[in-house]
Length: 215
Image (cartoon, rainbow, N blue to C red; front, side, top):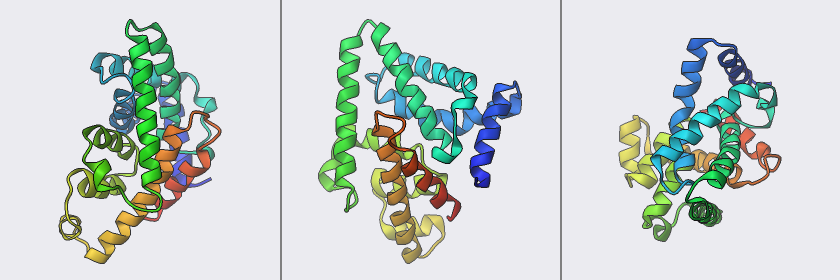
């Protein structure tokens, strides 16, 4: 087991045991990505998204034994927990049918985007859609910081390759290489997030963890 995988498991266990510093770090490391993932699936309802995120953290702290870091990252495991929390929340919500339809639309759009990424980067047509940009942001939020920064600058802020290189203080060739690695990591994370079966995607997300360690 890699050091990063062991650290994630230990962090979760310490947080569940009542370690305030571990709990704070767990929250700060994952709340933004988790909220972005949930927000897109609950009809952009901030209140419901906050409730689901809170419930997800509670479920994670109560099920530490279920997390296997060799099968995927902590961020994606949290997203799987969130999917179940969303289902429960949508079922009991007064706008349940509309939210369920919204969730189906989000996953369909993400699946379309995933297909568009293979073997090419995002198309101009997809990037022109505001909804697509939000979904891209949800997936990007779960990536390692360096990958997230590069992809955000390229595909959300629409920065040029030379601009990215200048901002990151690297050569254009290095920026191009970084973007290629980040796109591969994004595809793996994206595939994991849209998978409805938790057993279907861990191998893909494990690749993200390995690649991030090589950055």
